[in-house]
Structure formats: structure tokens, C-alpha cells
Amino acid sequence: MSVISQLSAPTMYLICGGIVAFVAVVCVVFAVRAWRAGKAIGMDTAVLRRVVTASASFSVLPAVGILLGVIALSGALGIPWPWLRLSVIGALHYETQVAQGAAEQVGIHLSGSEMTAQAFATIALLMSLCILWGMLLNLFLNKKYTARLSRPKAGGAGGSFGDQAMTAMFIGLVSAYIGSYLGQWISGNGRFTFSGSPVPLLTALCAAAMMALLTWAAEKRKLHWLEDFSLALSMLFGMACAVLVRQGI
Amino acid sequence: MEERKEIIAKYERGTHLLGRVVSALTLVMLVGAPFLIGSWLGAMPDLNAVGRGFLAVGLVWTVSSVVEFLVYTPMLGSGGSYLAFITGNLINMKIPCAVNARDLAGVKAGTKENEIVSTLSIAVSSLVTIVVLALGVLLLQPLQPLLQSPVLQPAFDNVVPALFGAMAYKYYRKNLKLAVWPLLMMSVLFILLPALQSQTSILILPSGALAIALAWLKYRKGRKA
Image (cartoon, rainbow over all chains, first blue to last red; front, side, top):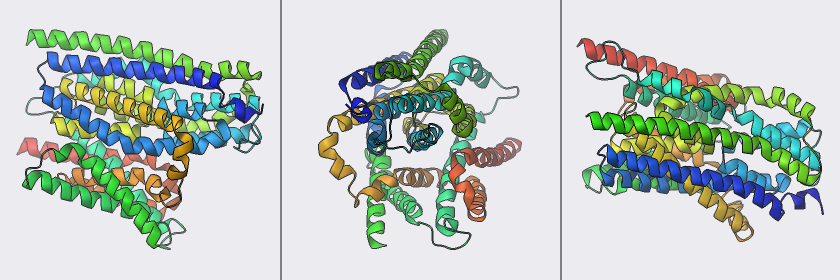
């Protein structure tokens, strides 16, 4: 039996599936605790329900994108390990990059035909080690950090800056990505050559246009139920535009 | 009021205890799995190669993890961040999902309501991801031709631009003055220094810092007026 066949054997599904199942249980426990705490402090059930609906509908499309990451890595690492990595702690943009880097260190290309048992174990360990820092920091510092953040500030009367700071941080995050799409188009293949891919920028613009339309419909036409699905629908429209733009180019 | 305080304090204590225990268990399982699989395959990881590999590719991600912890924990609150760092896919899924849920619920960052909404939203998002991936793995054979079809490839390559485009409209329309400068600074930077395009996740920090500085100036001006 080749190593790549062993990597998709039932034992691998058992090991990786066990960890995924553990994390799924953890998610259920956190969700139930949050729901109960919300109810106990007087939050409206309808609001909590909207949070669940919107979060579920929003998550389907990115999850399908993540599934593609599993498929992309399965050729070299089998199916169960990428499935575990992208269900727990992993990140789509991280896994392939680290797997490639790790393969180089063991002297192979990231492919099923070159994979050996020791190469796999080494790559798998490196993939786990490189990304666990966020979880480690949370384990040791989350309590202190969040306590410090929630400490009342001197002269804090008259409204908190915290909420505005978080909105600003998110605007900074979004701006970094939109700026990178613009840069990718204008200078992606050399400064000011305008020969890089315009698809990410056009996709973002189309999704923004659809979001504008849905926001208008929700606010002016009183279709408030649309708000729960506006992000998912805008993304779907943006992704459809990416296909059309690519076909047209 | 006292009762609310008591409920919140109890919830917080439980969250930290649970968060720490499950983070530790997940860590042990994730680091232990390669050794377990290695013993089953009959070959242990090459620790020298792991060390070299960590220096080559791991350090960048270590810096990125510290930045993520510092930036996202205040957005998500304690429960949300324990869960988000266990389940991963923060930038492309958990953060936008929690921010969107916060907006829909009309709660403010730093409040207990926000903490609850973030935790609920990230838990649901993670469960949906786990279910979609499990179904995808189960149906991999029949789904593969569809998901890997060259026609649909641009759609799946552009999930993140579609997400940030939609979020950009939502946030820029209410904060246009605040958004102009970070957007301009980042655009100029990526145009003049194209090599930085692969470091976008780290450049979130200066972009966010500029936006926060501008928000602070606006906040101070508002308080003085």
C-alpha cells in the first residue's frame, strides 16, 4: 500500500475525524452557553435567532471555498489531514504555503508520488506548530488581556471610544485588502503596468454594488429580512461576476 | 442590576475555564496527531527538518499570530476569541461573520452583549464549516468535477474579494471620511511596492492603526464640541 493511499485510510479518518468531532462538540457547548447567557441578561430571542441565521447563511460560501483547499492539498497529503487542518485552527491562505515550505525542508516536492511516511509526519507537525501561537496566547493571556480591555477608563463618561476603535480597526482591515486588489491590478506584473489581474478588484466592486442594492431594498422598501442574507447574496453575486469577467477576458 | 452582574461574572469565569481547558486539549491533540500518525505509519517526524522549517516559514506566522491575537481579541471578546483561535480561518470567515452579526444585533464592541453575539456567531459559523467540509469530504468523488471545473474556478478564487467588497460598502458608507486615508495609504503602498502584496495580513496593522488614530481625533473633537 503506497503512503498516499495510507493517508486516506480509515485509521486516518478515525484520528482526524475524532479531533474534528471534539471541536464540533466544543462549538455546540460555547453556542449553548452564549445563548443561555444572552437570555439570562435579557437579550431578545429574535435577535439571537437573527445572529444564528445570518452567521449560518454567511458561512456556507466561504466554507465551500475552504473545501477547495482540502481538495487542493488532498493530492499530496491525503483527504483526512487537510480536512482536519482546515476544520480546526487552520486557515485557507496558510496551509498550502506552510505545507510547501515544509516539503522543501524534507527535500521533496509537495506531491503524492514523492510523499514518504517520515516526510508526511514532519510536514504535519510543522503545519501544526507554525499556527498554534494564537491559541497559546489565548490560553495564557486571554483572561488578563480581556480584563484589561474591559477596565473602566478614567474620564470615560460621555461614551466609550472602544466601539469606534473596533469599527476603525475593521475599516483598516478592509482597506488593506481593497488596496491590495488595486495594487495587484495596477502593479501586479511590474509597477504601473496595468497588466495584473483586475478580477479581485472587479469582484469586490460587484459585491459592493450588490450590497448597496440590497441595503437600499432593506431600508427603503422595508424588506428587513434581506439584511440577514445580504452579505451572503452580495458575495454570491461578486463570485458570479468573477466567473463572467474571467470568461470575458 | 446585581443579578445581571452576577450572571455575567459567572459566565465569564466559566468561559475562561472552558476556553483554557479546550484550548489546551486541542493543542495536545494537534501536536500529538503527527506523532500518532507517524507511529501508525512507522516513521516519526524529522525534528531537525521541523526546526529548519520553522525558521524558514514559521516565524512569519508567529508574528502574524501575535498581531491577530492583539487585534481580534478586543473585537471578539473572550469566548469568541477562544473559539475563533481554535477553529481558525479568522480573516476570511470568523471576523467578518462576527462583525456582521454584531451589526445585525445592534450591539456595541466591549459590551457583554457583543461578547455573547460574537461567541454565538463564531460557534455557528464553525459548525457550518465543519458540516460543509464533512459533507464535502463524504461527497468528494461526485463533487470534485463541479468544484474543480475551470469555469467555476474564478468564483472560488475570489471568495475573499467578494467578502471584503460587500463589507467595504457596509462600513465605508457610514464612515467615509475615516475610510479614505487608510484606503489611499494602502493603495499607494501596494502600487508603489508590489512585493508587499503577499504581506497583506501583516499590513492590516498599520492600516488599522491609521484608522484608529483618525477615529480618536474625531472622538476627541466630538467630546470637546
